[in-house]
Length: 452
Image: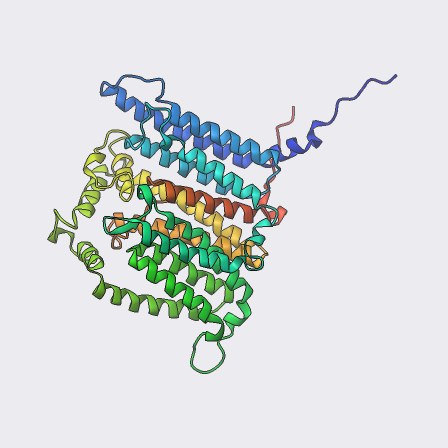
């Protein structure tokens, strides 16, 4: 009787999936290590000032690390084929955002039941569910049949409901508990636009001869939707959302039809609309005046800009040290001006490194869009990545006084549950699209082990 041979474990599906996702595993470990060092620096600074050690101090980092372990094991178990570098960049940004919020005292670390401590873990789980649920091309079902116009109608109804039943705060209109349900527009509107442009790409590209005008017969439904949604958002005074959605629309039209004229026409209309809005809305006029000459009103409308710039200037090249700054002097430090706090405590080098991670995230999103064969998936990925990049640019530009303030948050970093959850859903959709990329492009080869 021959002895039983041990099975070749290298052929087991889990082992194969584990081997394929080694780049993601390394990036996640680097994120856990880097964020852990940041937590150590922050806690050490507090202990040096006489703060007593509490058993709940490591809780945020423990939840973050445990969630990443669950994320990786789940992706390996279901043999997910989506992009790995994108997940690594997202893991670092989400962890850095959690670290920054704990540093600013947004969450009560001493209370394990504080819901804020579980926002990032919940967002990662939500992203995972979206990515797996819509993988293998299932995301294409989002615009099948009449679903396309359901997304459009739902977007309009959502803003109308917020306007009717919301509460006004600092000039804008919010939902119950100051949540911003309109953050969902970053998903619903892009899904509609991607489906509409994909269905009518050839017709939208046919500008005809003579005077360059778009084919209004096919453009008017899209035009009416955009005008109606923009009017509702401007009534809500959410100019930042209008800019984010408008940029995404122009980029998707350009890449969906190949017509540069859409960018030119969109730029002209944007300039005219901006000039008109400045003459109508005094709120926009005040922000423009504060941007052009902040020292004219240093204790009024320009106070936020000047305090943020002062904090970043004091940080210098290397910063004052994580946990050693004075974020209490920075207005809205947990949300709009969190980048100023980062510049103060981590300096120019830390602020630039954070921007580089964002660029990696956007670069992977654009790469996925470029390598996606399905038209709707390509436009969906392109639109979502454009929204995240535009939102980041608006926030960083406003804090550094490169552009006027728009009041938008920094994705994955700023405090705000609605924005954070929506950003995770957007990343989940991009990951779902990446699951359909060609295998030879998306799966790197594992490193060879040295021979004995």
